[in-house]
Each structure stands twice: as structure tokens, then as C-alpha cells.
Amino acid sequence: MLLATFNDITNLMPSWLLCFLFVTVVILCSLLGLYIFNEWHRHTKLLPNNEVAGVMFGAISLIYSLILAFVIVAAWEAYEDLEKEIQAESDKMNNIITHISTMPDSIRQPIHEALYNYCQRVRDDEWNMQSEGVDNQSSAIPCIRLMLLTLDPKNELQRNVFKVVDEDLSQITELRRSRLSHNRSQIPGIVWQILQYGSVLLIVFSYFFHVASLKLKRIYLSFFSGCLGMCLFLVWSLDHPFHKHIQVSNKPYMEIQQILQKTNSIICN
Image (cartoon, rainbow, N blue to C red):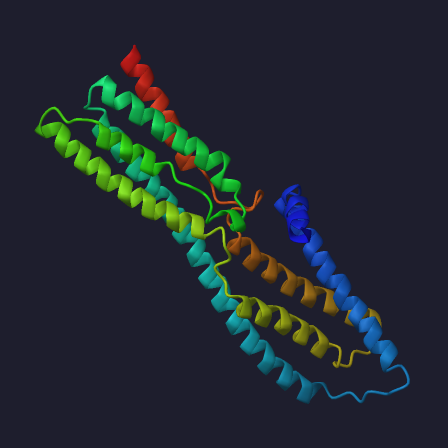
């Protein structure tokens, strides 16, 4: 319930505002941590030892940055794979339209309508689907395939066209299944925990650095924690490609619908 409420709230925010709020919260939490740290050690004089601490901080930062870079690259590749799968699904539907255009109206029209409704369903329902609804979402592809099975090919040409269309529908089914899998997080939970704990560890470690001016230390900390916050938000954004304001484009399905409308309009005229 709480997660659903959070998703509803974030869906109302533009991406820039969501990023700004997240980074601001990270910065404020880091500054609050610094305040608590200073209060805790108010009566304890910490000796300046930035050289040793700097070496250790550099080593920890290097390990963390390598993990972060690996996760960002993996998330970006998954995002690009999703875009390729969407385009491939669109290409297969375009291929079906091309082959079916050689058929008579009694065959062509129902399949065109089924494809149009399929694209509309993808845009309206599947694009904003939550991860818990993926397994319960039925596909419109079996209905189109069943429609083909009920049609009786009149000649060898129609038989070959039906075979090609059936193969394309099979590939569309696989591409759709892969597309829906991206509604779930592609990053394992343990990796998210490492990124979160690593960020906290680096921020807390930075408290031990001696800076003559507390104001200057707060400025340094704000830049440092803000950078970590932006990196985490980037990973989260790439891992949620169907979020309302950060989602991948559904333009290929709109283009298929436009092609269907244009094709049917030309044939009718």
C-alpha cells in the first residue's frame, strides 16, 4: 500500500523535479549526519590526519566507483536492449501489415483491426503496468493467431502469407514477453544494497576529514553527496524505463497505428 502510494506520488512529478527532490534529500541527510557527528564528538578533539584518511578514502572510492560504473553500464545496456526489442516488435507488425495487404478485405480488415487494438492496448495498459501485474496480463497475440487458424487459405500464396504471419506473431510474442520483463527491476537487490550502503559509507567517512572551516566542509559535503545522489537517481531511472516521466518512447506503436489508418484509408478510397 505504501509503495503504491509512493508510485502514485512520483508519477505526478516531472523527472527534473523528482531528481531535484531526491538529490536535495540526500544532501540534507548528509548534512544532518555531519551535524550529529560534530555534536557527538563536540568534546573530543579529532587530530588532523587527512593524509592517511585520504589514502583509505581513495581506495574505498575507487572500489565503489568501479561498482557504480559497472551498474550504470549494465542498466544502460538493458535500457538500449528494451528500445531494440520495442523497435523489433514494431518491425514485425509492419511486416505483417505488408504481407496482409496482398489479401482480400475479408482477411485483411480483421487482422488490421486486431493489430490496431493490440497497439492501443500496449500504449494504454502495458506501458503503465506495475511489476505485480505483469504475470496476470494476457496477450492479444493468441487472438490474432486464432483468427488466422479459422481462415481458410484459397491458394498457395495465401498459405505462404499465413505461414509468414504466424512466424512473425510468434516472434512478437517473445518480444512482448521480454518487454514486459523490464517492468521488473533488472538490477538484483543485493546490488542496490551495495550501492546504498556504499554511498552512506563514503559520506560518513568524509566526516572524519579535517577542514578548518565548517562552512567549507559543508559545501564540500553537499557537492559530494549531491553527486552520489545524482548517480543513484540515474541508475534508478534506467532501471525503471516505464516510469511515467522517465519512460521509454512508445512512438513505434503509434507509428504502426498511423500506418494502419493510412493503409485502410487508401484502400477505402
